[in-house]
Image (cartoon, rainbow, N blue to C red; front, side):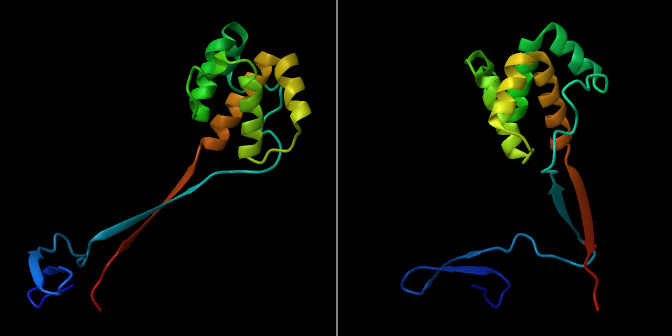
Length: 148
């Protein structure tokens, strides 16, 4: 509740004032307020093909020579424990999860075939997808209060 002196007054259950709380901040003229809006792309097909490895050389090299490390990185980017890839079927589960999260067209059968027949290529495609889809577009809007 507001008291005449510009301070908030806290009341107890009986209705009597118990203590005054100072107002710490008030909006003033010329202060800037910032609003941040985040947009993430969803829907459609995979943004890159399974064999489109030339676009991201470092991911391709990791997938070709140390796919287990790439799988750990994928689990981290996906928001899971980095130990997840040690469980059987976890990469397949992450691929299905990525497809569902970003509403990418496909089926569980396609995901299974891709992961178990082309494991390093599937990892590279999933990493590229996470990089692209999680690259958020942030718009900042600033407003200034003026007197009228």
